[in-house]
Amino acid sequence: MKPTKIPISVLVVIHDGQGQVLLIERADKPGFWQSVTGSLDQESEPPVQAARRELQEETGFVCPQQDWLDWQQTQRYEIFPHWRHRYAPGVTHNTEHVFSVRVPPGAQPALSAREHVRYEWLSWQQAVERCFSWTNVLAIEQLAHRLGWSRLASPELLTVASYNIHKGRSSGFLGWRRRLVIHEMAQALGSMAAELVFLQEVQGRNDRAALRHAHWPIESQHDLLSNGYHQSAYRPAAHYLHGHHGNALLSQFPILTVQAKDFSDHALEKRSVLHAVVRYGSEALYLFVVHFGLLHQSRLRQFSHLVRWIEQAVPASAPLIVAGDFNDWRRQLPLAAFQALGLEEISGRPVGRTGYRRPDRTFPSFMPILPMDRMFTRGFELVGSRRGGGGPRWASLSDHLPLLAQLRRRP
Image (tube, rainbow, N blue to C red):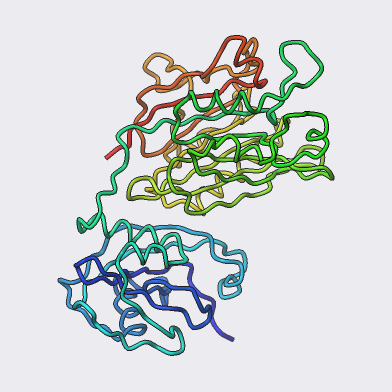
């Protein structure tokens, strides 16, 4: 019986030191171009040894120590479903150690026909377009930044918003008839000037509402709210005969990968969490858009699932933001588990010198008394945070008020 693969691998970006990167095409997946990759032979094998072995096996190159660079960096990604049979049951994520190696310009590799069928030298920009793996793309962009081929830099300040938009329809203060406000909401979100917007209760499709409202948008709400300025990602949490709704992310940074998991704890309350990775300057920024249930025991289980997912999917040193509608108005979630992951709450006001923050009250929007929405970060310093909106205009848009925070990346 063939042994299962170890979910720890190496990525070796081959370059000539002059802006050219070597890519090779997989034999088992025509059209899939990549750098050299491979799993450790055994868990005790040092990653640098695995990198040298894989380079020689896949290209025939044997390079001196001075041409190698160990980035001392790991990336974590979800294993494609069609390749999971190679791993032990239940393994879904792989940890990848990143290396680069310089070879003479135009060097011709001796490919292993069993693994790869073609090679091509490309400019680093062309290589970024050709690669199928987002971690490989990010590594090439980081290499270009390291060697001075590009000037990718993280913005000095990052503004983040989180908002439960109540499906873009509002009943106002006391009214029963729901009014379409998604077009006004697009203007309101634009006024926040946030680079990242975490959205909950986004209507992906609703055929019934489209018949009732004369100005129901043709596009989905997340596309309308992106307003041509952000990239957007949406994943449904609840499906019904006439449509679906869920969570979304608006980003001014390139979105590298998106996935969602069903966090529903019972049939009557559909919940999910959206996870995305964006390119923030020359590094990967991991994001989770949260919407938990109304029942305390459900929230506890959903919180536990989220903690395990972050442990699986995010490298321990990677920058991370978790935000959304936690529905934890009694503040009973065991946040010590977040603290163990290095996550700090950034929404709300600090209480004395304790380091504890009293979350902002965001619900209901016309008279906010409950702290439903929260933000947590790792790898950032808080410049300032506040509850967004306020007043009749914002109260007429949704039953929640948005949260806003301005962050600075820690060195």
